Length: 402
Image (cartoon, rainbow, N blue to C red; front, top):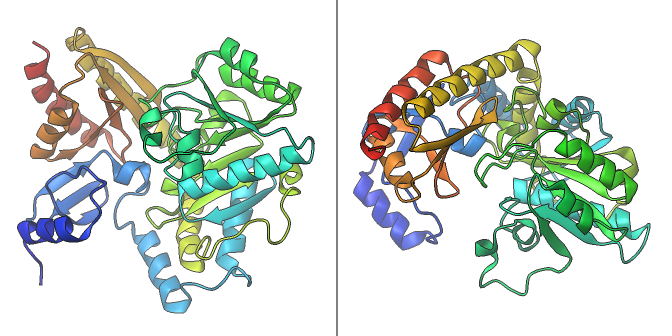
């Protein structure tokens, strides 16, 4: 029997650790780019579970793959082989042009593994080669190591001592990075596009220069593509857009279309740093998660699919720029690639209000970094759905832009 919102809110307040600033709706089911709440209200989803539901909700081939696999084998220890895992690893290796993949359960786990193997690899060169450099305003996870790699001190308050050996530079400031990197640097860890930090894109040949600098100092280049990977920018990996290949790339979010999974993919040379017993996971890469991942990996890399992401992303960005022209004093910037787009407001006080008003109009959006409306919809979004969002935003922004 379906319970009322108030009963669910009360249960949550009593039973769940209060770490989320939740919106007051109970989501019940979804289809395509739409969600319905407990009371039957319909919402157009421009958040996609924070870039997770890349194929939308209840995508039939994904539902079938999960159902078929669940009826066959949900989990077995990684002490044994399974075809879904072998297939998923093979596909990721081929798509990335790297050497070997490892599956975990989340983006934080993927980044933990990437940091760990990078340091193990560096230790083989020099036991003191351990520095990890990441960017201010980055986001890499909430475990102790990944929140330390995250260049946002607010996440590190009250949980110290945090791990040593992490330093930060400003994204796009190559001169600062050049001063920071030494022969004791194990790796540089960057998001090709900063997501949680406000949808900041790389300028010019910044990433190429970072690649060359890492090579010079025998440091590894790690790209955190947890939010930007899986086709979101119009290429399967965002790094392909910038003509740069990392030594390690991390993935999660959209990799299995909503089923929890994470992965790091490394070159064959980096993979040599790990031996049996050096790393592991109980649930990571189990048959159910990998069966779901294989649907995503068979669908999104198709040329026509990625071309459509680019097409819809260009259309969407153009429409957001139209709003910027209409409200030039209120909208500071429109930025992003493909279907990861940000609209920066001059107002730092009403981001959540705008999100709430959009929800009242039947659209789910997100505000990050305090004043950036972030749009990371399912990759199947259409121009008609973009138009509906733009119309809703126009009706909301006119009140705040006075």
